[in-house]
Length: 73
Image 1: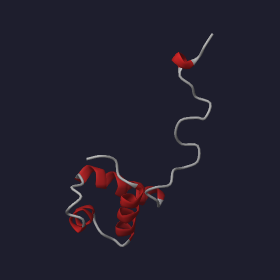
Image 2 (image 1 turned 60 degrees about the vertical axis):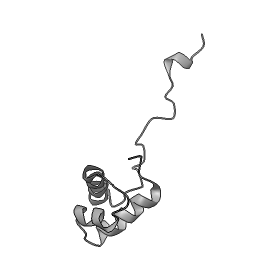
Image 3 (image 1 turned 45 degrees about the vertical axis):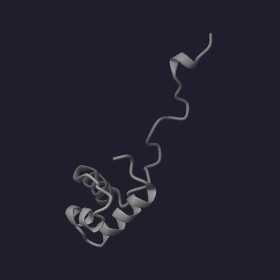
Image 4 (image 1 turned 180 degrees about the horizontal axis):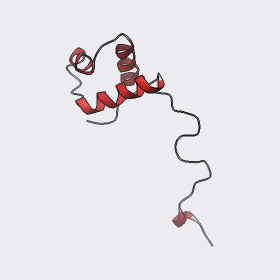
């Protein structure tokens, strides 16, 4: 299955905040075919940070990062 969309993550976050466990979230959308491990990762992010879609400031690749092969000498 491909990446989760923004809307799918928000749906999972809402269901998790309502107190549903991972298997109940999967069974509420049977047509999606989501893997248990994928839903567990989203739920753990919701439990730890409170959001499934927002990132902590400063996380990710720095803006000044560059690839060595793209430099011209």
